[in-house]
Image (tube, rainbow, N blue to C red; front, side):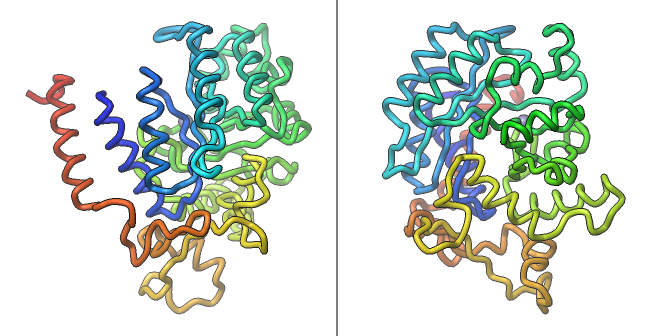
Amino acid sequence: MTLDDIRLACTLGMVESMRGGATTIIQHYKLPFSREHSDVVLQVAEKLGLRLVLARGWADQGSNAESPASIMDDLERLFAEWHGAASGRIHVANGPLAPWRCSAEMLQRTTDLARRHAAVTHCHMNETQAEVAMTVEAQSGLRPIEWFASLGLLGDDFHAVHGVWLSERECELLAQHAATVTHCPAANMILASGIAPVVKLLGQGVNVALATDGPASNDGQDMIEMMRLAAYLGRVSTLDAQAMSPRQALDMATVNGARALKRTDIGQLEIGAKADLALLDLNAAHIQPIGNALSALVYNARGSDVDTVCVDGRILMANKQVSALDEDALLAECRERAAHLMRRAGIVP
Ligand SMILES: [Zn+2]
């Protein structure tokens, strides 16, 4: 993909996320072709006004492995140039792509570096049974969370994204270390990965945050829909219609996400907190009449009901119009570039 392709794809993705009510996005960036490719993502977030945590993806094992020097240099550079940029709206994180693609030494070196910058580590793991088996075989019987715990990676600055297949011991380790499990209900269903034991984890005191996962493993970036799916999955997996409350679903989408980033100034409406808000228009046939506002938000509302988005006191979308760009022009440009990309890739003649 060219720099222009990346810029358009990121802009479209971030606009879609904003339309789904997101004010802060963690992007686990998978394609670090060059510093320009990473920078263009950060520039788009800066322009749109969203909060962005760029978890710089890396893998030093297997196909397309990157050299340790290149990973460390680019991470150091990103921390120096971007961590805390755009009046503190942009942060950088350590983003090992998956346990079976990373060496113990690089996991420890990058986590140490992230900790020196008070930054988090974000890794997609325990998503499928096959992936867990690969780590068990490679690490003398240790499951991924056990292996990471033995390396000193777990802490309140660690995110295990997915956490679908977790043993009893792994759940205990996550709770003990105050780590976060990032639950991606739609992606887990689309890819038939399984159902994360969210109700159990919440019961054990594990911080569970909610996410969409990327567009390659999800058909949408609608966080309002994710709340409903998380509540439904919590119920069907426990055969208990009371298993997950609308409050728990809302907390996973807001304050638990903030806790994952070690932030107390976002994710909740509090005096002194940042003015990061999404306002929804609830005057719609699929929502009215409202008996309970929380239930209406989680079970009835849709991303398309988001009317206004505000980050750090700045209005980024009002009356369903994004302020920073002409969305019709963006969609037209994306259509044209996508067709061009398909031709260049040989997918269409
Ligand atoms: Zn994923």
